[in-house]
Image (cartoon, helix red, strand yellow):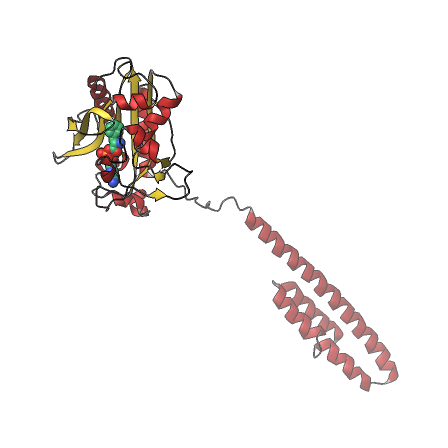
Length: 330
Ligand code: FA5
């Protein structure tokens, strides 16, 4: 066997080799159990003593050299593999990954817009609990237990109330008139946004869960004319300067007189958006004020109704279905 030739061939193969699996193949070919060098070792057993020593020495040299070369190459290939990998990690020319940014739900956007407009008119934003007591939701609002208005505001009664008290999911945001008047002294102007619940068969304009924004302004002299100015300004800022409103009589136990406000939609139809009126003397009495010393107006506007008109939707249940095709439009 020509050791020089074998050595040269092996060296060339090692030099040309580009990846680790190819290198392992070369290593097997020369140094493996049936490899060229290994089989040569087996063959020299048949040679004479002198030749055995000579060839054995050369074969040992060749094997040592190849082992060293292959090991060096192996290390080199590994290094360049990791180098390439780490270079890939910081390849600043690659296009970035796009983050999916969410945005506020259309109803949240509407509530924020309502808050902005009323804040411009000097109203501050207050909050109240969704789990209410019977007292704040009804009694303090001049709706005693036997009042027929309890039927139209049937709701979800909740177990676990304190003794002598009944808990329910609030049917409207009006309890916050009482809660706020108990803790603050007029003159005052507030709005209270929040979720309301009613035991109601749903349809395109009614949900069993919906949002209202309550409004309350109390001062020495507050009239329906003040209310009209505020609500008209609000509608024009919210829907556009040409918006027409209609105010007609209605009935609520906690206002006197009571009114209903509608706006005209794009097809010319009147759509009810809120109930309102002047705060009833009995409500002032329930918070310990002397009636007729203070006057006020209050209103409760339906957020989904405003959003439906603003966005041209015909079914408010769509707001609660989480359908991205709808939500992503706004
Ligand atoms: C009330 O809830 C009174 N608390 C409003 C009020 C406040 C009157 C202050 C006087 C003074 P009403 O039930 O009409 O009233 O509801 C008011 C508004 O809430 C409605 O105009 C409507 O826009 C919205 N609304 C009422 N029920 C639903 C419902 N089931 N689904 C969606 N919106 C509703």
